[in-house]
Image (tube, rainbow, N blue to C red; front, side, top):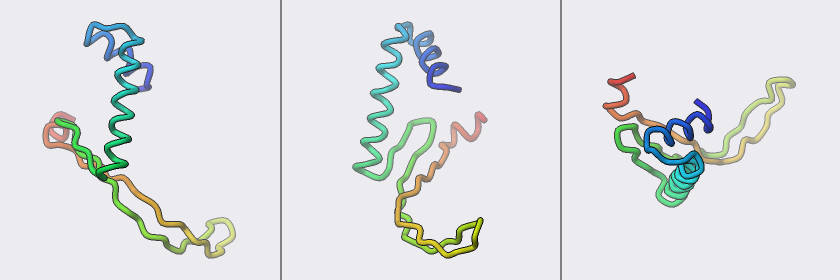
Length: 89
């Protein structure tokens, strides 16, 4: 499902215009981004939770040449589905 499909579906379900649905979706996406930036965890009721976990720097290999490379530290995202979602899918 693309962003356009989501906007169309939101507009028809909520009985609002596509412009209003796009604005609502953009606001929701910004809220999720902000919440994950600040608290490292966000619970989406009936869907699941998203957690940000730190990943340390490590050494890897270039698959083409086999040379060792340094992979910088970063964050990884973990999604855990809610029971309602698991049962419905």
